[in-house]
Image 1 (cartoon, rainbow, N blue to C red):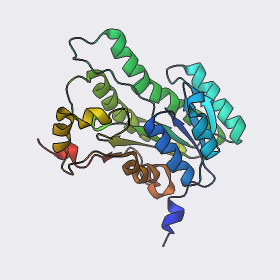
Image 2 (cartoon, rainbow, N blue to C red):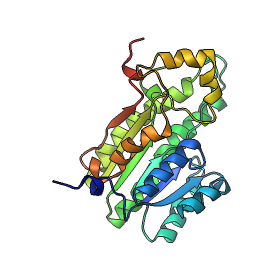
Image 3 (cartoon, helix red, strand yellow):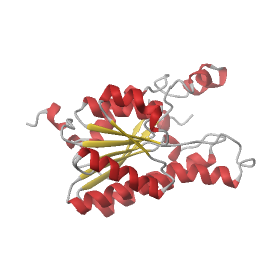
Length: 254
């Protein structure tokens, strides 16, 4: 029988996290580090990751996921620093515009698609190209959302992008399986962070929480185990999967 600790270990792996300066990116980086990975923190403003980089002895790179040149430069810098291609990728960078669809501008729509869908494709492609060239296996985890499968008002662009990301995950999983590159998606429900805490404390926010069967918001820590499953050899036979972590929200008919 396999050792469970060894199955979930990322010792000897190099993990790159996009959107590393945000709450979820920070949590993901800490989990990957705790599992033994060398962590690369990718963000548009790498100086925002300075404290985290010092804490984790991690390497920070500037990366705008909408800029192909910046993505290539970041991967090149990470490989030069770590001595090998990044073989765990957490596609976490994301933005949202909350506005009724009738009022949303084309520029706002494009900005959301560029980061949440196009950017994830470009990062995954850049990582996969390097892994294929090196003859190395890898694991790509796309951070999707339950809004890729259900809807709420005011986030048409975000919901469409996350739905596209789920389908992109499946497509890349099929194409890259022969290269031993696994591509899966993690689909969180509502996760409490410092940014949205006041919203969920409001009357409207509390009503939203009551629709979750577990009657609570998720936390970044709730995503730690599922992330490690998809990133490590514990999930060796998983590719094209969408792991939902939402307290039962997406199956609640209400």
